[in-house]
Length: 582
Image (cartoon, rainbow, N blue to C red; front, side, top):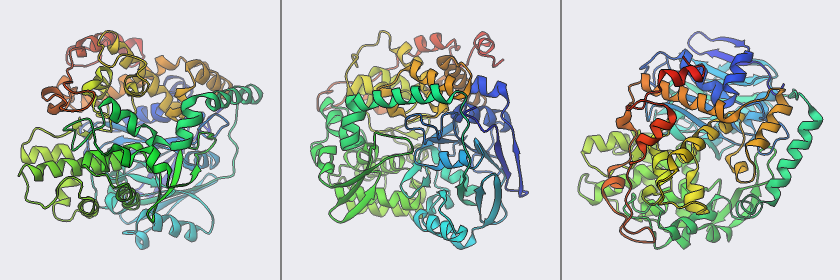
């Protein structure tokens, strides 16, 4: 119950379409969503496979709570080997695709091989077929969605790639509903490498629940808790994620001009409070009362999903105080299929390259039109855009400079961790690299300041527990914002009533996190990759309320010991045996 017990298996090389069941042990040990997808990828992918070769595997998965009455249960994930980082990678998206996929009769989709022609995948009520997509190859994501709905003659939930995915930009995203994204890690490039333009899903089925009455009661209680919490009931509902721009800037950790400092003098001009003046409406994902999505019209520029991370990336980090140009950048990225974080961070790095004479290109901080020009050049791999399309890590290796802001090849999100010990450790040890979503320690250290951000004692344990917890939450799958008001016991109750299975969430999360680590270890990752950018370790923040702060990783050994990993960060045999991963 909670599962459909069916995964669609597509081999694009042969055109074969089949399905397989989810076994009971797979569910009990890996839960769903990210967990099951990680296990399938680990078992199915040959080590050292090129992420953009036809041998890579692309997996879309829902969780046992997806599409139910559980709060914010519209989420689904995509898991593959990343062409940007070379690590295992999971990206998550809200909206309605996950709900529709389960109504269509599937918990997930496994995509193998590479089609000999351009195709899109159509799924309706258990039936799937590959259709010709030559006509829409080269179209943007909005045009693709409109075309697919017209072609199929009915309203579907659609995923698609734009020019960035077609051109194998290493941080290309997969777009849903024109503005939601499987954003990070370049999974849009993996989809493009397979000649798969889009996936359209439609279903009318029901999602089975083990104990419907108890599940309704538990779900209703969770919705009520979210309706009372100040973050989910007010801040996110009123301002969306940009509500934190001024907070992070006040702490002195808003990345500015490629992380040269943590204070942006024009932060107010790009804040959630400023954006609120232009809000024309709110929207929500499936079964969500938070409604953090905002429709805005800024000086004639209309956009949706203008998030904090996008504002940081194209705003402060590029020295840009024009909110309307950030909205235009957001629109371009959504249409072309680009991750806004990596795109903005790569452009910021390129501006510093130009500023310091490493490249001859006429661009400086705050030149919003140049930023927009570079976005298109990246998607089309035009001129310098071809170099930028490879990401910050490869770009920095070419020019031999020490101010590339990434971890394991993943460009950093909008929190300078030089003034946050726990977030520094999380960045360094997250399996996919510099992500803020695999252990949201920044919430307690920077946003609420519930814990001392400079204190080292106990932080290794906090980070480990957060990573394990979020690995399980990403496998349910529910929106991370629910964890502002809900606790482990609430999720456990929802799961038990939906599935009839009692899960130890932290234990399952620990198993998933360690299996991801094993994937990276066999790809050649060791302790040397569990680090931070040189700027964090060698340069103090020069201005703002974190002035003088610099990062270190003194607690890395303590973290390894807690994890029961050896000195190189490899899980010890006894730990693997305890987790059933031997």
